[in-house]
Image (cartoon, rainbow over all chains, first blue to last red; front, side, top):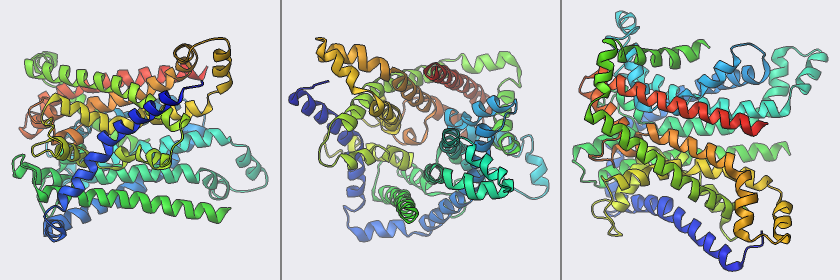
Length: 273
Length: 241
């Protein structure tokens, strides 16, 4: 289409204005509000014992959940793209469930199964293991909500490249383990990397599922997103620097992780060339 | 498969069992009250509006990102992923900061339905853009030029040539945005105020110990979400042919 210069410019203006009002301006205001009483005030809110413990718990949960879902994701993607079992279509549909079920429902579901009155709850409690209203439940909730990312990034890549190279490797006498490490993994590397990035972002920021299974006690079961929520609740809607400071800390953490991963990704890409 | 069962399937089955544990009659009475129906209506309404606005604006943004060129385009393109990277609770807070009490621009939307819609537009922005963008890049521009040389106006070319090619992508992006909006909690937790969004009603029910009514509302939401999921798959299958 040969679009006139005026039409192009007005379309561009509408798109950029929409993005600025919806994304950029609100985020900028949070940063500005965080530091409006000086960097010292903001820093003191970020370094309270509750905030520091929340930061570590957030990182800990991500460190457990992300590798679990990466291993499962690559395995499930291999099953979806390579095997010809009958349950494949069912598996394919089920994997998307965590994307369409509300996180709050996921939290409720975990309480009903692993909680004190739940299906398996007493089994664990008898062995002195508390899952719900404790860290293990929060880890399971995070694993649940971030489960599909790696599968959804890796499966299309596997289908796209086909299995000819893998068959060639097998013909040349490679064991299936060798084929996986030497042939399959290098081709799906970028899919895995992007899936891990998305999983990490979700794991760091999850609140809906985690808030339901956490006891929300500062210092033990409070992640950064929960800290933001709790600080906002306590002051009764009068949003102040303490809330903005926690939010900025969380935003900086997740954006930093993403940038680091992108940098790490592009460096390995250059080495390959 | 065991992993999937332990983490995903068994818990979801437990919700369904809980919802109908005290009989189907109790299940219906938990749904058939004004609060639950209101919450479902508000949630569905807001999600439909978000899917519609998101479809139009997302397509427009994708168009500008693919067909236009201007300084800073790569930055804008990277910006689209921000809602996926930014924790949802921060997303909700940003909107309070801008449109809430003490708003620097003098607009007070926080704690209203308009605020809910803006928050949902924020978190679902990437869905339509990222689904339309690759299709638009692949689109053969010669067909458009042919249409133009045969005397079609820009509006006609867009409606008869471009839009049919983009429609499946727009649909699947909007359906994802819709499904996400139905269940969204994080970005709404701070901003919804007294607006009774389904996920927030469920959370309040859990907190007050009425797990049965929470489970009943959950089942209705899950069914809605599944309908959208299977609708998506059918669209996907049709595009494949």
